[in-house]
Amino acid sequence: MNIQFFDEPNLRKALLPLTFTRPTAELRIGILTIREKWQQYFSGAHCSFKTEDYLQGKFPSAEQADLQINGSVCPNEHLVAEINKLSEGEGLVSQGMVIASKGILKKRIDYLQELRVIHTPADLFTHNGAEIRADFARVTKGRTSCPVDDKHTIVYNPENVFIENGVKIRAAIINAEDGPVYIGKDVEIQEGAIIKGPFAACQGAVVAMGSKMRGDNTLGPYCKVGGEVSNTIFIGYSNKVHDGFIGNSVIGEWCNLAAGTNVSNLKNNYSSIKVHSYTNDILEDTGKIFHGLIMGDYSRCGINAMFNTGSVVGVSCNVYDAAFPPKFLPSFAWGSAAGFTEFRLEEAFEVAKKGMARRKVELSKEDEKILTHIFQQEKIQRTQLLK
Image (cartoon, rainbow, N blue to C red):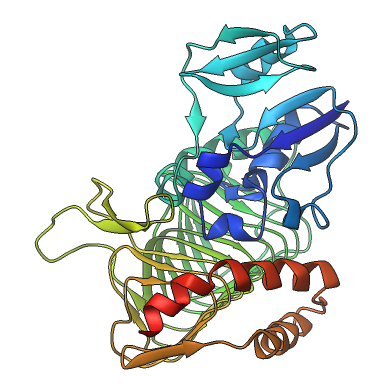
């Protein structure tokens, strides 16, 4: 079967800056990306993407697809069963939004059951615990976990812990009483780490010594994370190794949060938090009292950096100084609360190359084309910041 994931334009824009560099189906929530969740239901399916033109080189489309799926929709058993009932030309629709269709859509069928759609970046961390539970059930079904072979590690509710091959754990505390704990292939959990479920560490991730993982956290592939972390997703290949707090946040790929970085996720007066909207170019009230940092790919911050509640940082930004920067930083902004300049494109390439080389990954020509497009697209926003 050929599956094509399509970006619903309004949702994609609302999910910026995370979707500047990927289709919506490549967002991670729970253990897996949205695409990977669907692939578990449609085993052996070939996947392609219908997304923005500048992304198609890295995420190619296909001439023909048996099934088109909205990349913002997380699957469940009932939804998949209804999709399997569709005939050619039929599609499922929820509140006017197409969920999935077979062939050219001619007949719309209302889907009236509960549906998890990712409308904003905050939906990712809000539903992360539930998606860890759902993914855990599917990923581990019928399989046997590797044992915890370290006598100094304490595990509570071990039947709710699953460990893949190649894992190294030393003198940690793993508590799966309130939710499952998934530890992926070749993950390292260092001395003194405290992990509370729901929790997922994907392949090659490192939980640094003395960490406090407070629950509803996902460490994407090859992330290195430490300090105090609560209800946060690291999509992949990003670092926050040292002490400092982050909560109710989503961090893209190839980001680095330096020692002492702290992210506020709750206002002192407990009022709802406003967050920059890419759709309307204003600060919009989220109605949430917990909301931390949303950070696009390739961005980083210096030691003792602080981010206010509801901060949004674009792609390839560089933030330093121990004072709060503006709550919204457009892509390729470089500076501190005292002022920002433009992060020159060639310099941004060099920084990205050096950071990726540490994981033995190269910045591809397609990556450079994507970053160039974002650099140009965000120029007006940067100009407003630099005034």
